Image (cartoon, rainbow, N blue to C red; front, side, top):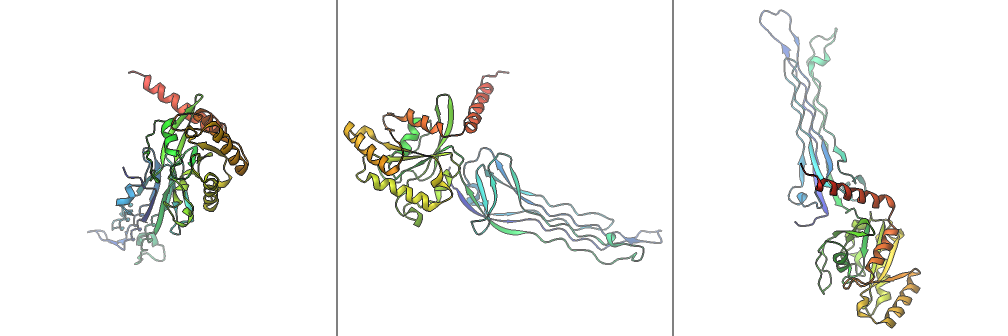
Length: 349
């Protein structure tokens, strides 16, 4: 299935039905009267976060969603039926933005969450509604309320606990493949990862979700490479894992490039807790490891860990460092969910 994390959608609620102008005319009844019914209400447009979806690909092939109009009122005090609502089913983590792509209408972060995007129009009153003691034969009725039409953007931001940062070929996909059951594409050329990947990682009895995103390059905020729009997928992460390629000849420049792009992107990413790791140490001897680690620590101003995703050296220590920076609530919720799944799987009818 193709991964799609941004979609433009056109929605319209249902218009209300108009009221009826009608008079009661029956044989052998001397006095009639107004009996025009009210119009029905137009349908609403809703968005609902559902389980089992991880992409917005459904909105690639259908962009227009129109709710049903309300039916007009009829004689004999018959009210028109209400229009059917329409529901846009989106993955958990979807942000709904206004047409300007900046104003957030809703943030769908929980399964079952619903929000009304466009309210249907009310039905108009029939002439029976306007009957009074001084106006016993009204000949007017209200039209139905007009529909609400708007353009919205759907932007998917994956919900994960750890986000991977680094230049292309820094070893992010290799790390995810080595520590989880995820199987992202791994190759020896840049931009192997073209869309985000998720993997569930376990250490010391706790589980958390790691998100691997495409690599950043200098100028990504200006649209170079794959851009920086996919950084939205790590906005919800509790901690960032910054991988630096130890075999690169420009190690310090690589580190600064990622920091500059993250700061330029904004959205609070630069303030998130970050674990910096010198990766691919299997290609370095002991002297090089110590020298590069000291150099990187001097620039980062924080501890730098050593790891090799290919051989697994140091991966457990890195996972423990990540776990210590994730709130206990996130870890506990995932642990409880795993226990429930095991109980359900072991039950036999």
